[in-house]
Image (cartoon, rainbow, N blue to C red; front, side):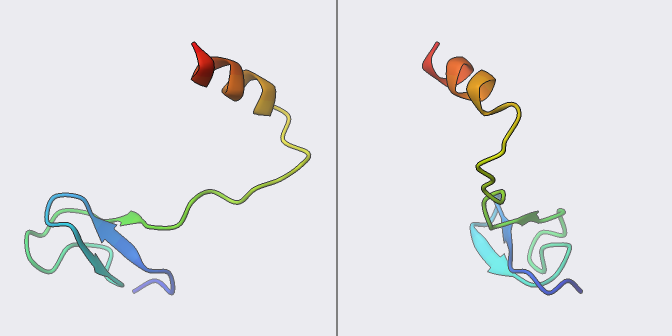
Amino acid sequence: MSGRIRYCSADHIYTLSLTCPVCGLPTAVAHPARFSPEDKYGNYRRLAKND
């Protein structure tokens, strides 16, 4: 069991388990990626998002 809350996209439920207790599929971390002002690839990501 991990310490971060996780999300099952198939059942739309939150859990602490690595697998969904309802469907058994793997869950994903529900938190966004950590922000860093020194992001080397931030300009490329913003350019790709605007296309």
